[in-house]
Image (cartoon, helix red, strand yellow):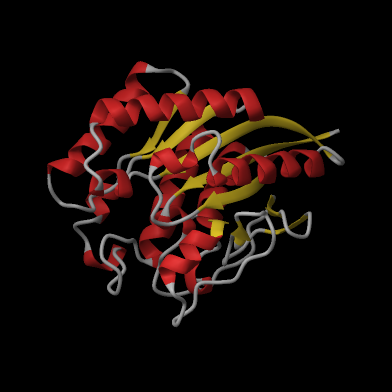
Length: 264
């Protein structure tokens, strides 16, 4: 039977997708996106993700006149905002080209979330687990699942709240242990967060992510490039502070996908 890798993309707004435009792009060869609401796998291309309510029913998109706080209260998972570019296609394009493996992308992100809102027992975690398990069941009809990877881009909200390094590392370990138990994940992969508060609070989260990857072999650092992209205007969303542009997300995706492709 053919083999496929499942790659789950978790985190907050930069993983959900908060870019300024939809760049022209082709369908990613040898990769698919799992859609929970229709229980289907579709050719992978921007825009990605699904708007899923806390009761796991179909939600509504973020548009220009959307009341953001209400949307956040209603939803457990969100699609790329305004239907714009997200990092998932560029990640999977680089990953499949580098590794030669088939990939099934499972997008499970939502903006303005702290890490605590992704731990076991929360709406975010339960939605993520439900969607990922459905993806496994779906793909196993035609493929043997070779590896399950979790890719994490999150931490801006924890910096805003002033959560410290040791706290954040502890929560990363809790999330990893839950994912290993509930999804049999093989690796917790980190796209190290960029700067959002632009003070020492960012350093706490950045250092936590760097240290956990050095100390615990369950964790794999994919790229530290986000902090460098913060300094380059073309890679930042000109309309929403602290968020990457479409080109920035594509770059983060490519660097991260190449790194994981080399690892496997």
